[in-house]
Length: 258
Ligand code: FES
Image 1 (cartoon, rainbow, N blue to C red):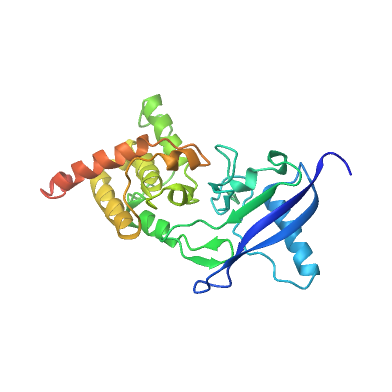
Image 2 (cartoon, protein in one colour):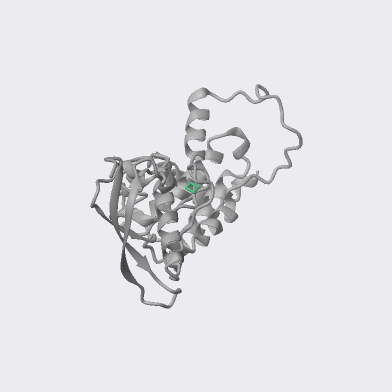
């Protein structure tokens, strides 16, 4: 066998549906290449299972290039696995040793019920964005880029927050199941820019209160930042807290509409 091929044992969470108790099952994936991505390795496992007449493992994926936020696996207890700043779909088997046993679980958070096997329902994240993660102004055609000057550090901070792909790793990694990093990122990329100012405080109040309906409370563990595949800084949580506090004064006095 080439030294670039590995035998890997997988302990995978299998669960028939939301009300099933679920259990781990072990599978051997032989001679997997270093060059294979983690999801390609699961594809090979599924081909193996199907050829044996067994049911394939259900897992979420789409773009497979770190953009869509669909992939969502807890790998050896770490959201998206052992490589910092990397989504599951961009993780490769070269990160693992031959004869390793890898434990694969779905996101574990009460806000994310398991649909089947490794797939969870992340709709509560969509509810937060629906509450205010947009601007309502009709923007028409694209304006000239220099029409509204924006300081470079502000534009950079906004774009850094806009990198959030909404995968939910922050929630899965947080001991409280909090979604403050996600919500902070979705607020910050709008609230930092001139185009986001008109609805800034309605947005802050609506998004934070929708978040609180579904998720736990942030107690500054910082696990979210460590798990984020886009390395989004917990600075966005500071901005979320500051804007929410201001919103409770401004919105109460109806000043934001003046
Ligand atoms: S599959 Fe799209 S980010 Fe991983």
